[in-house]
Length: 445
Ligand code: SF4
Image (cartoon, rainbow, N blue to C red; front, side):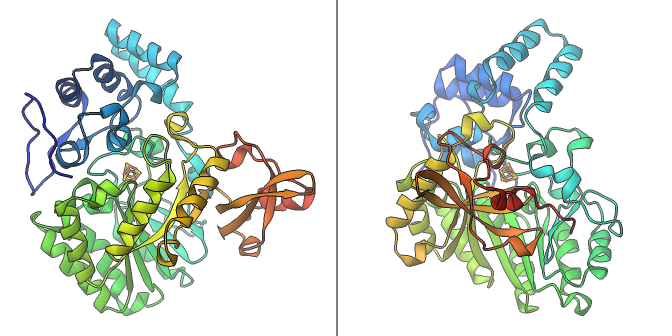
């Protein structure tokens, strides 16, 4: 999509070298200038006290259609909206802001945040390394073969998604943050865990880091001592939020050379691209970035949650998957919106998510049907909602674990009572005693 007319407000700083990013008052002023809507502008001020927001100049100028912000999926994905908070919470924050009482504001905001389930999936208590782990909170070892690494310098993104399930890491509360400051802790952990074949470098977005810093995490993994690490994945939304990272950013070329070294070492390098809407793939910089990434030998896979106001219809997903296949990106996961943050604003009932996924699949050829979903990433594992079925007189959700802490549970269908309003795992009820096994199993890794 080409640049959208901006009105009289001066555009944010444009530079391919470093993203001009707007947040706080500057973001509010820009929204007011481009929309002329004081309610949308007030929402920026109030909601961003509670949830983190920042938006890159690329998103503001190249992705959002300002002629219809309320109906624009990218606006809804990246900009605050008053409905992201309950009416009472919105009014409470707005009142205390007007009163100018900073101490009270902190209290009210912390209270609202605590009720937004800042750590979904028991991440703080369930996913930490075992007793022989590094003792920090920058590594998660959820499944036997896969370790997640959260480099400290990668705990932010080029822009934020309003539905981010890691929002708690971005709001400046140390008790709510994962971060690993030293790549040596990662390698020390891998020394003790030769069963690990996959390392996922994640964040935030690890590609906000300078290449030199990222290399400190990737290059040790290429040594013969870590031959058991066969696959390196990098989770990122840089293609959507700042594609210049792969083009003419100062060390964009260095980044691509680093990826080439990983591939030459014989490791499988997968860029796990967070792609929510076809528009993210429609710009010239995004397409150039895809070409350059593919030339390194990396494999590009895509994943995103199904989000109300953003991509909650079959046509959007079908177009996204078709475009991805055309560009040699492999559709991987369609997730369910997590039970955290502005969930009520973004969530879609599971039954509807199943319908959307199935309808989207029917619109594309076999190569576009590789995105598994809808999938809930729960503390138990990755739960696929395969469909809805009638067993005798009873309607049920048909479920299956794709990944689990207990591998014995993987692949076996199980059932929950159908509930048309259910949006998340914790609202499901096992159909029978034997199905209850799947809801209980949380053996330590
Ligand atoms: S890109 Fe990922 S980590 Fe960053 S804000 Fe969006 S969902 Fe969160």
